[in-house]
Every structure is written in C-alpha cells, then in structure tokens.
Image: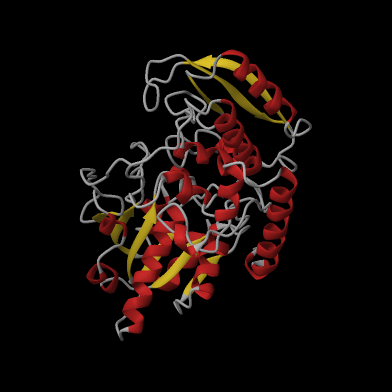
Length: 385
C-alpha cells in the first residue's frame, strides 16, 4: 500500500489518527495497525459511533475502551459538546495527525466535521504561537460521486451536523473537503493529501464495502442519505431499527385516503429515476419501536439523475400537508443543540425551510437548488481531486 509506504518520511514522528473500521484492507489489517509499524502512533481519536461502528446515533462513546498497548484513546463524541474538540495539550503533543476514515458524501455525516474541529483547534494553537501538527489526509473516493445537491449551510444553522458554506451533498472526497476547509476558513495548516488512485480505486467496490457507521449498511444507502437524513428532524421513521435504514421510511399514522394521495404524489415525483415500494415494517428500536409502520422503500433507478434531497423535501412538505394533525417536527436536544429544532439544523437554509412549510413553489425550489449547486461546483473546482 503506497499510502503507508509514503509515511516512511515521517518515521519517528509522534502521530495521532482519526479513524474507524472503514479504514480497512491493507494486508487484511485495519489501517491504524499498519501505520503503527511506520510512525510512532500515540493517540487514537474516536469519531461518533466508535471504532467498530458499535454505537447508534447520538450515543456517547465515553465508556468505550480498547486494548492497543500504550495507545491513548481520545473519544470525540462524549456526553457534552466540549467533547467534540480535543484538548490543545493533546494536539500539541503530536507531530502528525492522520485522517483515514470514509465519508458518505453528505454534510450531516459527522466524521469529517470531527476532522474539521481538530483542524480548527490546531489552527488556534498555531495562531497563538504554538506548534500545530501536520495533517495527512488519506483520501478515498466519494461513494456517491461528484454530483452536488442542495445549498450552502447558512451560518445561523451551523452545528455538528453542518459546517457553514457546505451544501447537503458536497461531491468532494475527504481530501478535497478538508483542503477546502483549510483554505476557506484561513486555517493555514500544513495539510498533505495522499491522492485518490494511489491505493484506492477510482470507484468504490460495493463488494468490499465496510459500513462506516451502523445505519449505512450498503453503498446504496449513501445515495438516499443526502435527503433521507432530514427525516431525523421529523416524526417519520427513517428506518432505523430495520435492515434498510434511510431506504425504508414511514409511520403508523400514514393511513386512509390521505395515505393513498401521498402514494400517488410520491410515485409521480422523479418517476424516471426512482421507484417506491409500499410496505409495512416493524422497527426493533428507535422511533415507533415494536409498532407497525405504513411506509415505503425508496429504490433508485438512476443515481445520476435522482435528487435525494429534493425527494425528501417534497416528502416532508406533502406529509405535513396531508397529515397536519399527526405529522410533527421534533423538538428537544439534537446533536448537543436545543436552541433550534433538528429540522432547521439539517435543512440549514431559510429558503428551503419555507419550501417545506408550503411558502415556496416547486419551480422556485428547483431553480434555487440548481443555482446554488452550480455556484458550489465553481467554488470548489480546485478541490475536486
């Protein structure tokens, strides 16, 4: 694996790594095991869900422990928002931080946000005259390609599930997105990207898919996730507790003539690039545990043409319209934030929130999305490795 061999120039450096089970494959090893044979690996930074994706969403990893010799374990998803950022003294003790973790192509996915928070913290150290580590990004293909969907997240909605300026589906690789952060936010860090193609193929091999988190079981899940993640902010089940999360969705209250009208509208929406399969499902955990839900499976016919975000915005808007008494936006703490409801943090755009609430037409919504997507593609053309 040339990526590992390229680290020989850092032999003897004190290193940390942000990784999980998705960084696997070299000689049948987890990559952090291979790196430890070359650099002086001191610290293992754990993202949300833990090292082996053993934890569900929004579950603290503070009690996780692993026996890897003298390797220090730093949990970046604990009980408090402060746990998301590593302590300065830990970063200053390292010469090198390796980011080797798979992304799924959507801004809500928190792994690269954890990397960004580490980079921000290191940048502050550097600005204050301290020693900041070098960041080495082990790149990998975006599993859903370079297509872009959505609009830049507005600053007012920034959170752990959304970094400002980034659209819902960014179309960048990990190296591209983190390099964008370094330039866009003037972090002025030393960042090296091991480019795509050095080890990883240009495209993911779905037969070699390692789930990066417990509810992304297949590569197909990634195609629907840019839109279906929005259901986390509603009382529609996003399919957690089933074998097809995000592809499966629904609720017990989807009944009667209103359900048949919803069927009709969803079947017509983007009919050439997707199908919906009507079904019933019984979540074993999460929303509506042990309750029969009326719902659907979302089947993608043409990933290049299907707009997951637009579909899910349309789904939420129409469910809200047809089931005004039963449908709800969830309130309470979501990813450490309680000042705004989850749907606002996830949609992240006041114009799109107006669309969901029936204040913007279909035509205006599509035109807005297309314009914002073109702007992002132009803005990030130098980061499309």
